[in-house]
Image (cartoon, rainbow, N blue to C red):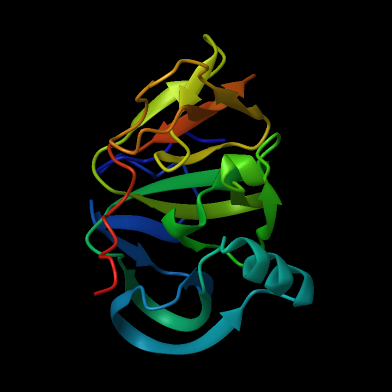
Length: 220
């Protein structure tokens, strides 16, 4: 897997199609792309937008049961398509016959030849909050978003742990489990008081954002 692209890194050695117009806007110049529904902010040329759904009954059932996975749209056409999501930072990955696991709410766009599915994090049952994520496999571009500037951790150097809401994506080859802190009154994580983290081991990376995501207003 090529390293994620931050800012205006030179991508001339990579296949064209995805580019950062700026740190918060993705420019797509491909005949077809799958993107988060509602992420289009502008386009030039001729494009058709169709609701993609969940990609089959199996994925629809998983999405309904888990709440994981963003609603997708399939966009076809020619010209330049501009995507963004709430002015979050955008980072690009180019997969080369490999896998990437992404928190569904951070998935912005990917090429249609990449297959995807919703999978449960190992060891994360109901007691762990039912942690599910979207796994992408194949060859092509993937764009993810982060709330704030992230850090990329090399899990091969030492055991690595991250808050489940702060871990944006990671190499699918990593062994992922749940780590629980058995200390009374332990306050771990960004203000939520949880004593449970995702644990990563193996060859690969983890991309961690600088928060647990934008705050969701509580119903009145």
